[in-house]
Image 1 (cartoon, helix red, strand yellow):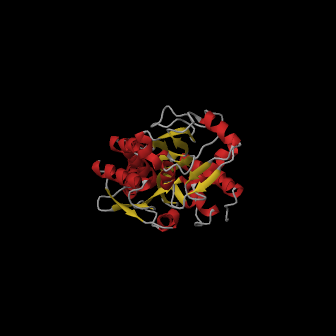
Image 2 (cartoon, rainbow, N blue to C red):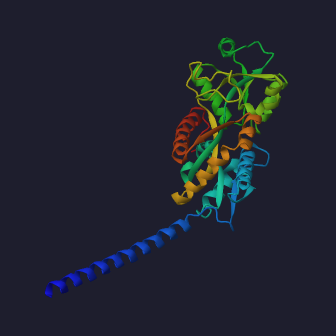
Image 3 (cartoon, rainbow, N blue to C red):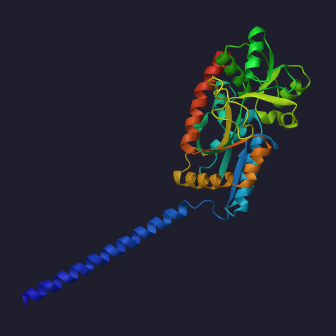
Length: 335
């Protein structure tokens, strides 16, 4: 009898233990379900604001609008693009930096934000954000008139070694100007550089009028003249050939370690939870592989690319070091 009583007690204890374990597991499941709801992005009733720190119609604006449109087309959420112009892009980016880190305010982050602090534009760097993904880049290029005497960079170098050529660039201290400085350092050539006050596009007009020997800007700054055959590219400052100009060598191929590119990507406030960052990353990665976006990259003479959050942050750090040195070498550093 005592033995049977002990067996019954043991059975009761086992049943009680199973019940407790079941309750605990159910409770854990509820907690996990709660966490899953917290990282739902974007919620249907909320609008995602994409801040473009430059004016309408430019490369950053087009990238932001096309990607946002693709995401809406795919039913991922509702996106609104807002242009906040000023301070060479710093005003819009500072709005992103100060926004609520909930994933509903994003910014188009140019990698050349690395210039801002050293140039005295704004006291911010990529470290004030959490880079999410890089989606395209424009590489600096040496461009001349198609009817010039130079068929390739070797021809150009022979002339430039004997006389100082006039080269127009983007604005002083801007990325295309720094590209010209870097090319001088790498090749040992000396240019008479003429920075444009309003960016790279006016440089193309200057070359069209035969007022300079060449320009150093991104190809999309002279897209119409390149497409018409009036201009030709002698070299591109990127680690690999452009998707749009497969016959044009990189300066790396020509023996010069020159990599000057402006990457664009998505960034969020630096305190944004990693789970939300991943959701944003995955959504924009999908959009950047859509044919509508890839077609725009081709027609605009830009380049589709991909870097995840960690890779984009590392690239921005590399640029920060490179551009700080170039700005100091050129006497343009203010910080």
